[in-house]
Amino acid sequence: MTDLRDRTVLFADLRGSTGLYEALGNAAASSAITQAISQVGESVTEAGGLVIKTLGDGLMAAFDTPRDGVRAAQRMQDQIERLVLRGQQQGQPAMLALRLQIALARGEVVEVGGDCFGDAVNVAARLIDHAGDSETLITAEVLTGLHHTLKARFRSLDRIPVRGRAEPVHVYRMDLAHSQTGDAATQFGEPMASTEPDGIRLVWRDLDRVFDLAALPIVLGRSVQATYCITDARVSRSHARIDWQGSSFSLTDLSYNGTYVRFGPSGELLSLKRGSCTLHGAGAIGLGGPPGDDQSPTVHFEILRFADTVPQVLHHGAPKTRS
Image 1 (cartoon, rainbow, N blue to C red):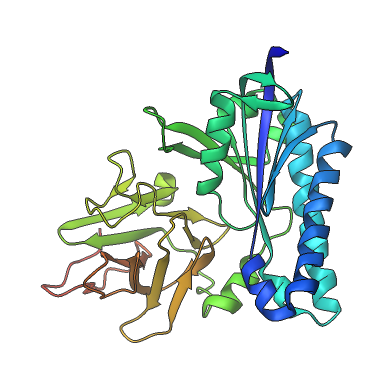
Image 2: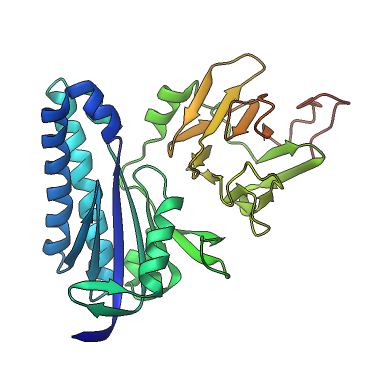
């Protein structure tokens, strides 16, 4: 029987399982992942939703209301956070790599034989590619159906190009209940100075632009709709995203080929595979390969404090003063 209904569609994807198999072995890792997906599924039913199907290390679910879908997403993230903490307490540091990505879209779907089809399904399935670790993304249609107290938990990421869709989708990100800024600074280098920055400068070839905080988020990608468009076939349409996280800039990889960061001329090279790091000082971002690699475009960045007017050189050539 075919049924047309307005539904909120959720996709969830558990990342970090590959490293878990390597660290714990097949049996222990499979048990941990099965437990994680089971808890994610329980969050769906507890919120009044229906698990449509499981997809490897993730699942697809449907809900009658946006509120139920968002409530399930909150529970899922909390469950995975507790699972990771428990693994750490039991002496399993590999569990720290587990992260959940969630995407929700709203619209009319066709329900056939226990499965769902339609634009909302396609958008949610594609939107999860844009989610970073522990992130929950929703469309404007989902946000509209939320109570104002829940709406306040979401921040606009503006319109983002979604694969398979001619028009970009207005996307919102749920703020984390617990700030992870400190962890990111410890893992990815020294934290930024206590004085908050005013903007960020990006340089790729002759494309030299300064963005203040009001311009964020910044999507780096090949799409002409990207905030910082890099016309290179080796770059994904939406390759990486720069956000403002409380008091610092955060870079999140959205690609399949990865994003790489090097702080300073000879600092440590960081590899972001759907992960994030805090940007500080100046350095280089490699899209699809390490900075300086001839096979991949390199974007030079500098964190700016507009009161500071000391010229900086971000690439070969004459010094450029800050805007």
